[in-house]
Length: 392
Image (cartoon, rainbow, N blue to C red; front, side):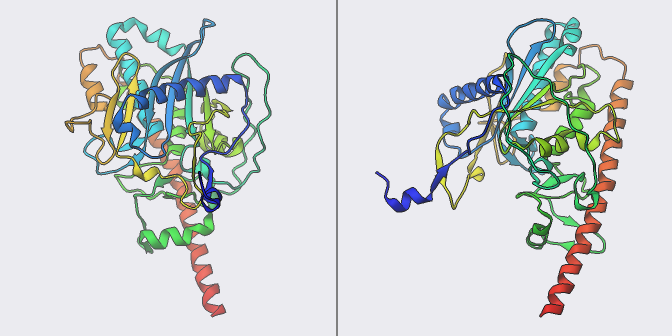
C-alpha cells in the first residue's frame, strides 16, 4: 500500500491521447505486442528502463491483406565513436532491420524487386522522433478527431510556411553528445544548453554544426528518408527505393510539428518529397507509472534489440553498438549486408550516385538554414548578455 506522499509523486508514464483511427491502433498494437513478447522472453531486455520502440509493417498495395510486421527495434542511445552501429535510436535501427529484410528477399529471389517497390510501408514509433518534431513552436496542435474508416485514411498535409527560418524552424539538429563551436564563438556543452533554453530546443538536442562525425536527430533522418527513400545509400545499387506510406506515432504526437519535421519543411526546396499519412495511436507502450519529479529514465539502457522477419532477435550493447555477447559486428550493419549482396548483379551505379547527390544537396540546403539559426542564436545570446549587464 502506497503512502500519501508516494501517491503524490507518481504519474502515468504516458498521457492519454486520442487515436486518429482504428488503423493507427492496429499498427501500434502489432508492434507493442511483438515487443512485449520479445522482452518477456529475454532477461537482458527486462533490465532496461524506459525505452522507445519502432516497427515497420508492409502491405501489398494490390491486395486487401492485413499489414505484416517485418521489422522491430528498441533503443534511445547513440555514440559517434561506437565501433559498431553508432545510432541506436529505435527509428534508425528499425530502418536497418527493414533494409536487412529487403536484402534477404532479394537474395532469395532477384525478381522480387518489382513486388517490393509496390509495397505500402507503415512506420510506427512509440514516441515522436527527437529533434524538430519535439519543438513546440510556430503552430498550435489540436487533439485528434476520431476518423471512422475501415482502412488507412486520406491525409492532405496543410500548406507549410517557413516564416521563422532564423529561429531554427527548418534547421538541422544533432543529438546532444556533440558540441557546438565556431571560429567566433566556442561554447562548452553546459553553456550551450543554458543559453539555448531561450530558443526552445528540446532536451538532448543541439543546433547542427558540421563535424564529420555528427549524428543527426531522428526528425532530420525522417526528412532525408522522405526525400531519398528508406533504402540506405550504399545499398541502392542492389535494393529498390521504398518510401514511407504512413507514420504512426504514440506519445508526444502533434500533427503540425510532426509534419513540419519529417517532410513539409523541405517541400519548397524538393517538390518531390514524400508526405506520409500521419496518424496518432492511443495504444500505450508503457501503461505503468513513474516518479513525477524524476521522469522517464532512458539512460538506464544497457542493451537494445533489433529484429527482422526470417531472422533471430539480435541484442546489441548500448555502449558500443556491437552484438551481445561476443562484441561482433551486427548482421544489420551496412557492411555485412553489402557483403551478403556482393554476388547479386547490381543495377546501374548511376542510381546510387543520383541518390548520394540528392542527399548531399538536401543536407547542404539544411546546413545553410542552420547557419542562419546559429547566427540568430549567437545574436540573441549577445543581446541577452548586454541586457543583463545593463540591468546589473
